[in-house]
Length: 438
Image (cartoon, rainbow, N blue to C red; front, side, top):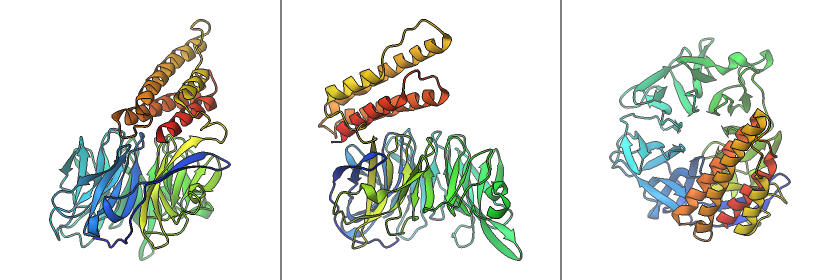
């Protein structure tokens, strides 16, 4: 097991703000040991990673939700790690089988951990909405030579390489587009290039680079559902456009469907490197730490479509802390409602009734707003049951309803069919999220 450091965790939630947005900062705590690493986040804000047990004798995969941190156990050995979670709560990671044995890839659905029989090479794994899994598997039984990128969709698929011995996959979107890295023949040796695997074909992302940037794309870490790819050395690829970069921030590690990018140092790195890139503006996530916090936020590993961010920071003694940053919207708007009644009034004002008569566009807007109003009522009714009872099952249901509400509203706004301004809806929902998290 990779050595980890020490210390106790104090669960803390502090609302902070910047010129861009306000955030609630939460230290995830631990499973009783000294260190916690957060690796991925779902649409509803559930987080997965690894945390040491009491005495630091082992580390276990965990899932964190409104009820706190839950130990996922192992496949029989001492250690496990969870890397990613999808919207259906499917979790992928790796676990020891026995002391001293090579780990296997597992998937957890409905609380049950299942051994897929795949021997990973220790690099991160990813899962999409369909439950398809990507990562890197050892090509020999003892994992002493090379590894190849794989896709598992019920059947194991070796994705091959870009013409050399090894490749590694790190991300997959809901369109089954896979991204990662592969060696590429160069002179009498190899260099490392980022790849995009789509429809059975692995493509070097440097094929899309202008002449002065060939070789910039070394590792692709993530792709959103629009096919936007991010990775090192600090590049961004948008389908139909040339490869862009390098940017003046750290390594991009994740991108959501709104095009917001987060990153920093890969796991194990230090310093205040974690960042958010949104709307052309880069923000250091350390901005949102409570005053006097000993933490340095080194890496942001995931961001969902609600703007919730997870990653890992380190305190002055080098102890690892998993964290969650939840956006509560722009200052003066996102967290203005301080009671459930005020939030209901704000949402009602943001989602007025629309006359069903008139043009087809107006009728479409009317039908959409009826759906949004229904979702808003559902979220608020559940919110009434969950305020002050974060461990209550209604808390997770309310957050999920709010996530659906925002997804529908943002998609309609992008298509130009919403019919009302998006910002007040986002602000009202953000206010309710902050109220639930208080």
